[in-house]
Image (cartoon, rainbow, N blue to C red; front, side):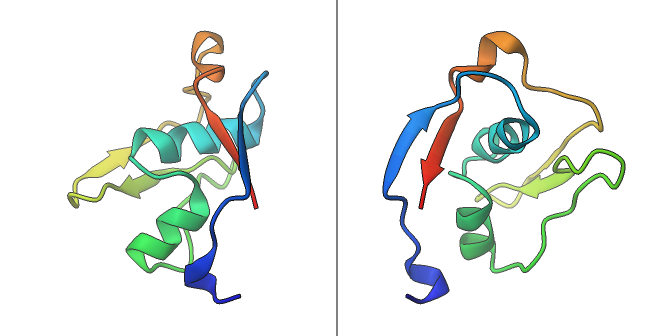
Length: 88
């Protein structure tokens, strides 16, 4: 299957916080499902991340404005259940 044809097979909501959930939260705040969709839409190979934590540092929204994120956790416990986890 071509890289551009990647579609999720299923979806569920996150139950507890993790590094992966944190990054999904950041992608979804910027209007994307996840890193796969971001790379597909923006046609980039890499996402800029903080070297210390591995969390996403900067994302470009579809309207070309940027979201900048801190090194520390931004997804609070009360927001975790809103994060959608896609399975490919």
